[in-house]
Length: 77
Image (cartoon, rainbow, N blue to C red; front, side, top):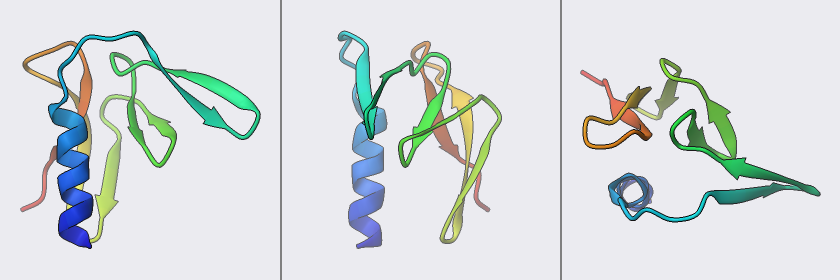
């Protein structure tokens, strides 16, 4: 299960197709997803520099070297 979750997370970050802004529905509220300003996890926005701990890994929201998007970067030892 952990491998599947990591694989899905990696696939999300590897997508580089330019497209219209995505939206997310939070109950009756529709939010526009802007990957140039925020990282996303579990339908929540995280600003650059935010840290996220998952099981035995740690991630930091950081600007991608290849694009203008923010991505989660693994900073685990």
